[in-house]
Image (cartoon, rainbow, N blue to C red; front, side):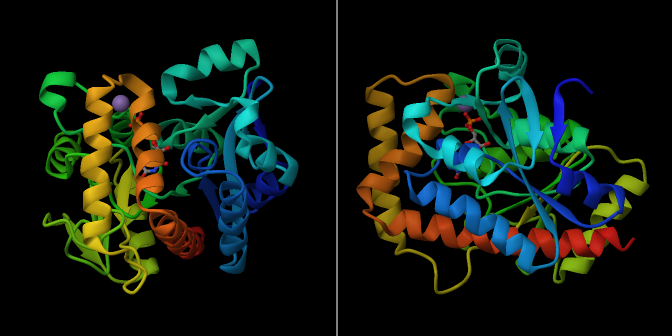
Length: 303
Ligand code: PSU
Ligand code: MN
């Protein structure tokens, strides 16, 4: 396909049926400050390799949907002066046509991963139904993508900038299974608990691989959310995060922010308001997800 560019290492792993894990690039370009973002992007790739899988970071560069980036490309995506667009599904034709760079959200990463033949994807948190969505209709395109695209997304749940209850209701409506990895509770990104349950609990990476295999082999299309809580001991203090979240939400409302700017604004403000604390936790949980995704991919490739 003219618009798809799979890195040789990724293509050869896929060809041989070896495990590959997709990574998104919005977390690099819009989710963390430079240079921590680039260091994290590299560390995620390294963690996947250490678990015996090949990483494929996904982005839009020079008119191509790329699966697998060079170290220079990763560095370039992380620099704010390069003005990388946030790319969800609907942004792709424009960016491809104009050969503009885009950092892919969960939605866009999933759809490109599927085109490339990658089934497992690790991220930090998924987008969801925003608080107040009954007025604003602000529901992330990530959820629709989970309904239609055959990729399993390993995440630490969804941030409490969102309405977690409505996000889970929406996923239920769309028929997307929410699996808890070694937990009965859906995690809330910085915290291991949210007060909401998961559909089913699985306790080993191989069981998760078996679940995914069963779903797709049974002709049940669409994604799977694998919710992997931040490791105990790496959780930031709840009150620090809760206060920062409320303040950031209040500011976003007062500035009347709209559309795709809202999520990056909230992520940035929470980071500023908690000092380094939220960023440290974000890196830890993303690494934890990359490791689990690689183990699941290893199990899945053996089926
Ligand atoms: N949530 C996080 N960190 C992130 C994002 C969400 O905790 O970096 C990013 C992901 O790329 C996700 C996107 O796909 O934000 C969702 O944006 P929106 O709400 O505009 O759909
Ligand atoms: Mn939105």
